[in-house]
Length: 382
Image (tube, rainbow, N blue to C red; front, side):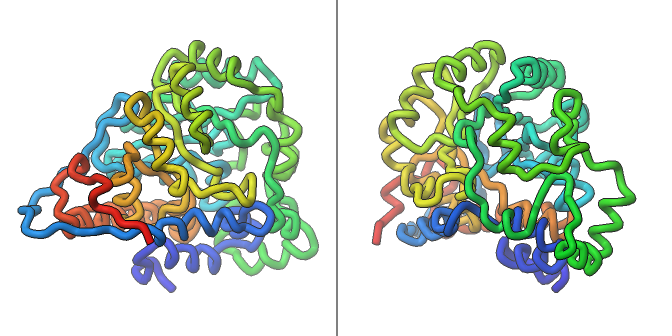
């Protein structure tokens, strides 16, 4: 399979599986326990049908929205994800460049492999930093200050990872950051020489937002679950979130909200936005899909806070269904990670372009000339 054969997210998933050593692929692809929630995240969209309108004069489509104070060219953006230079040597640099080309938000993770400062100086499009709150309060303060100096537009506080989910694929493959050779994994690295040579000969792998405070993940191999379980503050609470919002002083998002009660509390502490997310099914297996929770959260707080649907998105039609239910925007991680792993920046550019084209085409087929014309009148439930 070649890049030109990839027309959708699943095509890129297959190509990524062929090109990555198996511990790396299964880290991207895997989730918690029986992976029921991961699968439900996408399946939920199939329970809802679109009802199109015709003869609406749709030659010109306007997909622009304003999210967290910045206008973007389409209502889809690229969620922050960790460890991107493990998947392809270009990592966050490739994803950031594509986000800038398509005029949308780019998110970088605390556990990213390119620094806050580099992203701040290399792209002018909207930038989001995903903050994991560590036990080391000095590290937390440092990352917030670095985001201010790098002129990031928003911080998203991750609220659903105070412990790591039971990611059994990672247990079976022995995945760590940085990768640790085992007798079993060595063969997979050897049979993927392009990935292995890029990892060994390109810039040394590191976690630049963390390395001055902790060696784990950069110089000391550690599993993601062990990192979350030992490094993050499990006592984080709503008062801490409100204090972080005040310290940051800019647009502030909570990533990982799944209940109406928590959405209301996000409003109460002054958050700008919430991301309805279950961390791609990587945390609590058996939890609801974000799309299943969207309507009741929008009904409760959608007039007071920006609601973002995050997770399970594979098609432009998924984006339209979420917007019709009341989401302000939609985001996703695996939808571009497979493409990054498969082909670097050209892969990310191809899948984001495909999804953008699907959104535009589907809006025309729906008879919607702009995002504001999408509503629940367009939807029927099975």
